[in-house]
Image (cartoon, rainbow, N blue to C red; front, side):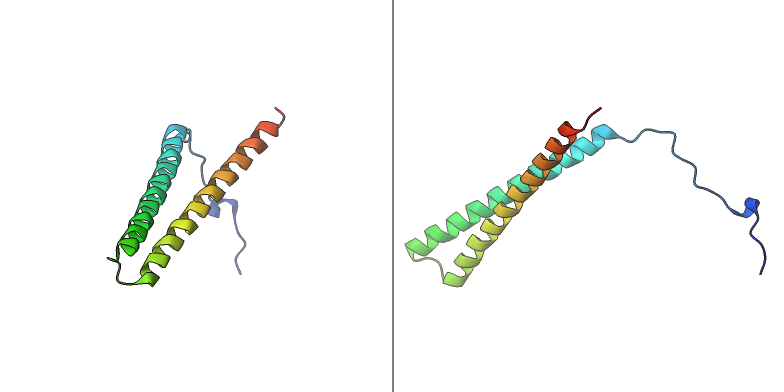
Amino acid sequence: MQPIQAADISLPQPDTKPAPVDRAGESFSSMIGDMVANVEKQQENADMAVQQLHAGNAKNLHEVMIAMEEADISLRFLVQVRNKALEAYQEIMRMQV
């Protein structure tokens, strides 16, 4: 075995540039916006499937139920994301500076 010398170890150098806070905020807001748009689209698809079922145009009840459950699950997920974001905000506000 050979002893490790200090010259053999190279530590990563910290970045001198600050993190792009503006881009992080935009990506989070765009992610939330995309999530809301996706949930809205799934809700509309489920409503359309129910209307087609009532009109007698739907071929399969199972597909309508699946569309409704997908919309319900995506809405519940969006609400949980909102709750977690709100909890994080409240925790930050409780911190003493």
